[in-house]
Length: 335
Picture 1: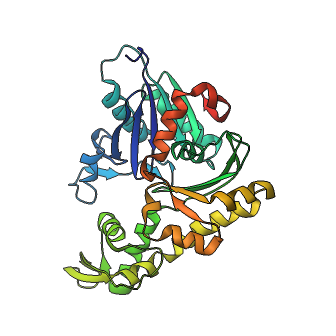
Picture 2: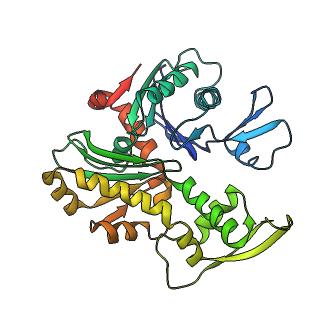
């Protein structure tokens, strides 16, 4: 039986938000999309709002309130957090829950403050913040408390966090505001520039999932794309190959590689030898892109492998940190 005080961990991602309830595990996994009307009143959140992206009538706007891993729209983020807390804890609750939210390691103190304020306004009793790479490492079952170096690369929808962790803390970190969304944008831009075809963000994401690969592969996979011709303005269907997609997404992937190299260059020699031995652990939804681990290994010379359940590493780590809060107190911000 849980106590009166519920504890919840939230992985507030640019693409998806996941909620962990103490004693139950992950209880909610929905897209980070909110639909609002002209009076800024929330019409739909999550799955329902995602269905509206690019399809809303006049007077309703569906958007992502987080951009590149940080809050872009404070009011809408607060409404979304309130929706998540109400859905997990029930609307008519006597006790306010304790909430832990993960944030990118590179965010400013102003951005951290915005997350804490939005969480408290949404109905939390106490708000804790944990750095995303630390949460991802805990969720990926990396023994972070030991005096040896472990490297984690968390690639989400809006940002990539690369960090070396030792003795329960982040030693070196680097974050770039490049993730799955930038890869989708690169596909959209390529199709418009090379084929005069305009597609929506959902179509770009489907192309990435179906035939996307970090390295151009021998076997040629094609997929059908539907969009609007930018010259005639009429609907058009065409085929795109996996080779073209690999070419289209090369630039954002190079930016992610540079962030990883930046961390490796700053890592103390003792910890660097540990990383060469253990390899780099990858987490986050974008780490599931075909051959991304091979690309990283090829360029850095350090073996890379994707963690088990990469999508859930951050939220599971956030939940575990909340359940063992005394152990991780040193690594948290609270209010």
